Image 1 (cartoon, chains in turn purple, brown):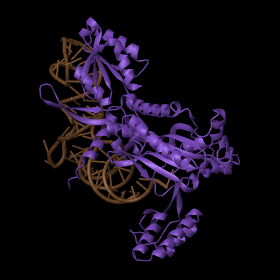
Image 2 (tube, chains in turn brown, cyan):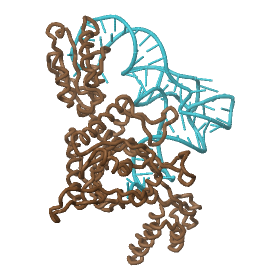
Image 3 (tube, protein in one colour):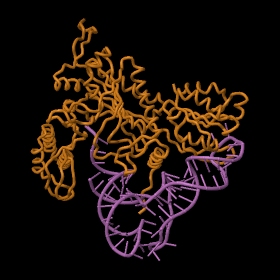
Image 4 (tube, helix red, strand yellow):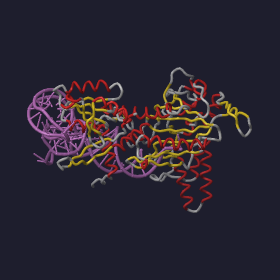
Length: 492
RNA sequence: GCGGAAGUAGCUCAAUUGGUAGAGCGAUAGCCUUCCAAGCUAUAGGUUGCGGGUUCGACCCUCGUCUUCCGCUCCA
């Protein structure tokens, strides 16, 4: 009868989602029309935080690495892009319905289940043959034979017990739409399911115009779209999401070295931001995607467990080679560096690629869930109180500084306004003179503002103000001219 | 997609056997002038998720639907 008690973590996740909505970080999309499943909008503070995370990433990639440049490719791409990338063929699942029970299954799962039961019965060889047959038919898109396989193997629906199946259909995870003016047979175009291909098709444009030499990287942030069958867990898995990707082009044979380099470099990016190292771990892929010779996830401990936050993939020369085949345009690079083994230049080759790909929305959720705390505090008189505080790293906090005159008369607002005007051109500030000072501090805690400055009567005498620190709740008196310096020092 | 639970003001919750919706907090404006959510006054805010049905009458009963959460499933 009673619903199962929530674990502290689940409870905390609920609280984070509520907090995100109540304080203007994340709203359900089109909420007045009951929302749209797995689509969310970012509010005033959420959009600032998201932008700051994106900027921090962009800065670390394109400014801190002299050999990485950025691009901003269109979401729409030529349809052949997705044939070359393999998404048209493999980014889809073969589905089948049982006509009696109306249940829908993935065909490969049905067959794998059958193979498992064969193994359990000791018929290992038969099971292996079945799987091999399935892989062959899937690979050749031979759905009729695949369906016949279901019948031959007497695979039935677990609900109805019958094998009264519909025909097999492909469910593609890419969204498609129409583009008016292209040829009849190609007028379906897709919303990109990943941003990477925009980089690959521009490989030579970028290499030539920016005069890049291997090894070099191309960085990009932008929206991607996947028609997930089930999308859940707040902004963790959305149908429309934003990626921050960097493709690093290297000399063939050196990919392992760079894979290891980026594995460490990317983890460092997280910890340098102030995220706790113990909430991260690597997860090596056992089953590799069609394009990779090595792959791992950087997982983060979200309130619902360790989940993928970022991927590091060694994509080999798969993508560029495929684009070369499909476009009939050479995608090779001429390397003038001398190969010590031969004494001659390395010459023409298609570079290998190391990809780092992080979900911006997932990073947002990682930051938010890590920052959220319902903190018990003991007041000076010994009584206890609670505050909700977001310990967002100062660098990416939506608002850096709140400027609060203690009272709204006696000339204090004038001094506060002057400070506001001198700071707001350099970082995001918030001015407020309403309500008791304690209440204003709490409101800033709730949105993660790292610094509050209060102007009081003493400020008029000696030009000092109190600066109050979010995490420790301590404050100190400093000259008003030092405020900007302190904030800039913390967010640089 | 399947199973379970839930939807009343921005939030947390009330509302008798079915009798036409209230409070606290929050918000806004004002007073007070105060260093960690103080106090006082006023104001705004709801076709009870949406659509049918039963009824003289529905937040309440019933059917459908949407959304969210939990479990399974899915996530190259």
